[in-house]
Structure formats: structure tokens, C-alpha cells
Image (cartoon, rainbow, N blue to C red; front, side, top):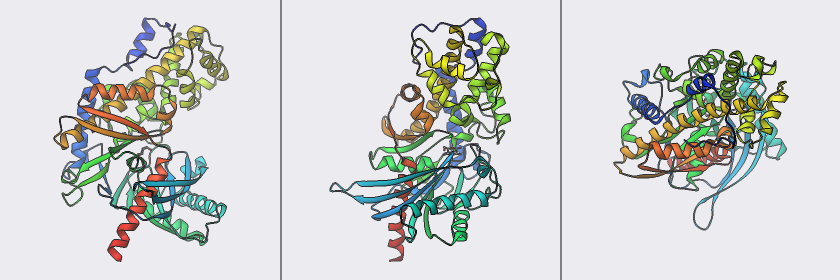
Length: 465
Ligand code: BGC
């Protein structure tokens, strides 16, 4: 693993080393994580073991053979983080036959109480955002096909029909779990009476990201999100997808690997900070793998580690400021600033001063090391996941070598200065038979949903025309 420590960082003593040691994962541990994940993935794919699998391997009904799509305007809606994004995507072809997309985008931030209120409130708010967007762009009179990126675990019965299994990432709106999400959105839109929408597809953000990158690079058969949450999808052989009838071709599987560890498979890896973050979350016992990697929890892991250092008298002369003792005060933006700091650690010092501390040089160095330990572990665990998935695809296809592209999105992946590089290097070490390219997606969630909708519209026309 590469050490990006700015020159001169040396702070540490036996106690510090012992605390940080817990976050270190060597190659054999990571290989073991890969094996355990593979085991859960297999369980998830088989009808008889799916119930007990932590990794649910959800069929998405997005298949491998999109042979053409409708040309025109689509509305895309993206719900899954702290914002709702609404956009218009124009799909079409150019002279070489590839897809072109042009977008108008609007971002709406979701009030916290709407995320944790009722489903009616949440979907009412979503419908309001759509209406506002259409109004702004003079499109209220048009009944556009809508592609909906909904970034939660959904058990699909078809492309436009799926039951929310459970909320994740700080969402908790009552009355949604166990219900068809497309229906909830349709009802909320109908209730308003001022807009009309034709919802043609609902997809996970991993799937939308993979599809949007596929149009740039036809080797893209994996979608990865490392943002508020963490998850991946990939193209699986239909013969292995026991939950859906048919053996021909491939179907995209939303792994929902964030729940890896929820049946105790990773207990030996978790540290006291992981357990605390889990206990304090809205979904204790759930999404354990996600909680060790993603942006919603990373700041907390660092903060708890720093508090432990304070308690042991290693940091800030043993005294924590109010901010440092405040739940969720510290977040990924702070980690980004600290990890991208130069040798003088001026940004680190600034972050700590803004938190009401008067840091010494050694305090800054230790803070840097705490961030580094947590974010490095996250990138390595994520790498073990990607390595497990590419290895599975390689074996599925009976190949000695596999060349494959992963479409990636997510704030943590984009913002943390060393995450990409650590992920890439670790994947190449853990899956040396695979040549893995990472392709960063821009607005992939929305564009992907629109592209999938465009294909779905064409298919619908084919069966009814
Ligand atoms: C959700 C996934 C989603 C991921 C990234 C997780 O919490 O369960 O469905 O893909 O976050 O947004």
C-alpha cells in the first residue's frame, strides 16, 4: 500500500501505533474478505440460500442486449443521497451510432425531517421538485417518460416495479418499506393534478452509472458507487441468476454489498469505532460493510478514533473541544482537506482550529494519521470487493485474463485525494489476472436512468406496435 504521508510526518509512539494497527489490513486478510464476499454472493444468487445471504444479489431486469432505443427527451430523477436531482436528457445517435446526451439539471436538497417522516411526505416532496423543474423549463404541459434512479435495495418484479426492502443512509420514511416505490411516486404525482409522468424504469444508482459509462466504453460491465453509501452491480450470466427465469444472455445484478457482514461474516474485522458508529446509526446491525467504507460514516470513524487518542492523552493534551465531542460534526470534507495537506499541515491546523482546538504540530500529525488510517482501510475493503466481483466475472466466462471497465461515481471517490489510486493499486494486486479500468462518471445516475428508459420505451413499442 502506498504511503502518501507528507514528508516529515513522524508523530507516533507505541500507544499510537497500537491504535492505528487495528485499521491495517494485510494482503491475506483482504484475500479472506474476497473469499467471504464470494461466498455471500453465491448464496445470494441461489434460490434456496438467498434468504440467508447478507448480500442479496438483486436482479435488476436490465439485460445485456440493448439494441437501439427511442430518440427524444426523457426526464430523469435521482433520489438516494442528501439531494434530489431532476434533469432532462436528450437521447439520440450521431454519425458513428453512439448515444449523445444533453442535460438540464436542477438539484434540490431534501429536508432532514422529510427523509425520516412519512413516505407520503417524501414522495410528495419529490413530486413537488419535478413540478418545480418542469415549470422552470416551461415543460409542464408535456408528458415525458421518466427514468427514476432510486438508490436503495429494491426487489424488482420488473423494470418499473419494485419493493423497497429497507431504507439505508439516514433515510427512514415510514410506509415505504415493503411497498412498490414506483407506485408511491405515481400516487404522489397523481395527487398533485398539475403534472403527468410516464414512469418507465426504476434503477439503482450503480446500474445507472454502469449503463451511462457503457455508452462511452463497451467494456463497462460493473457499476460502483462510493459516496454517502457504497454498492456495486455487474453483468451476471442469466444461467447463474436463479431468481429469474431463463438462461440466455446476461442480467445486471445489484449486489447490495453494503449489507455484507450483516450476518456476522466480518465480526473479527470490526473495531470499537465501527461498533459505535453502527449502534448510533438509524439502522443498527445493517449495512456493516457500507459503514466501514462510505462517506456517511467515515467522518464519525475518524472522530471516534481521535476521541480515543484524546482519552489516552495522546492528542490535544487530553482535552477535546465541544465540536470534537459532537456527533457527526466531523465529515468527509474535513478528511479531504487533511489528506490533501502539504508538509506544513496548514489545512489540518485550520480544520482543528475551526473545531475549537489549539493544535500543536504533533496534534496535526496525529490527526492526519487518524484520517489516513480510516480512509486507507476504506479503500482497501472496497478494493477487496471489486477484486471479488471481477474474479467472479472472469471465472464465469472461463477466461484466464479479463479486461473490464468499472463505471464509478460518488462523492467520496471523487473527493478523497488518494482513494482512487489506492483502490486501483489494491485491485490490481488482489486480482492480478484482471485488467481493471476505472471510468469516472459525470451525472451518470440521471443519464443512465434516461438511457435505460429509452431502451425500455423502444421495447414497449416493439411489443405493442
Ligand atoms: C444502498 C444502495 C446504493 C448505495 C449507493 C446503499 O446504501 O443500499 O442501493 O446503491 O447506497 O448509493
